[in-house]
Length: 295
Image (tube, rainbow, N blue to C red; front, side, top):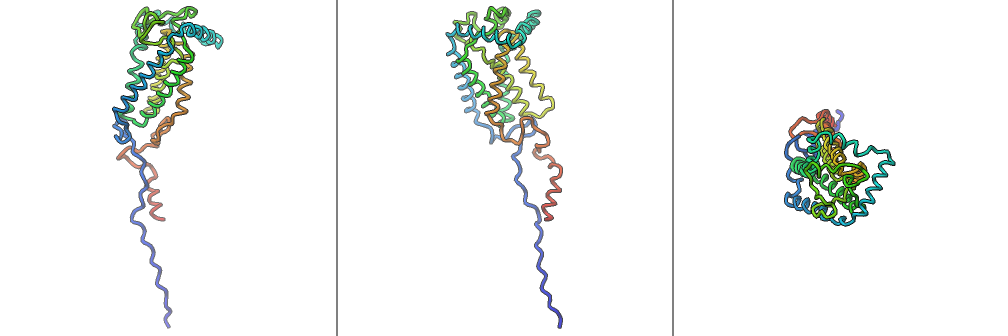
């Protein structure tokens, strides 16, 4: 009697293709435009940035009228710097005074680079790296708000106005100057808001923001901007060393509070984390797909 064999169980057909894994959100190629979906509305941003700037400019004026307190604080800062054995601001100014062209260039850098450089920085991020733009705008707003509070709480006369410092008001003597000749009655700018130095704080954030948003091996050169700004604000006697140190501390606090954008990048991006749109898949992706298909 022939033995009956059970029909062999049909083997399941292998999947024709493995299920594709969700792809990470594409990032624009280097120098290419960013996806419009993540870029905030232009008009809203213009109004927001302009509004924040006006609040800051008018807020600084509230510190006017505290002339005696500003000079008392200036003497305290000058004495504290000497107690900390910081180099005298004159060590930076003296080489500038040896060249009228150089001191004029430093005054021009102070007067003409601060706002345009920051505006160009934000514009480039808005067009090319909108997530980094939002992050940088928030950091700058946080830094500036903290600076405004310190301006109001601690009015401070700059070293160019402090007789004890024996420094030259280079802007008034050589030009160009963005301040009036009589600080106590200057209605265009508050000259008793030296602490912190937002010239230096903004310049440092420009460098940090560009290093975070770009991948060039030369991106560290952006640090030359805050370095030059530091030498300029001290050499022109517009700020003390401690003004710049205070700005750096406030920026560090702002960076700790405001989170980086979720683009798959660290603060210092790595090339291996980015796959250009239309480019080759990462090494090992094909073998991983074959392994999933054979399971």
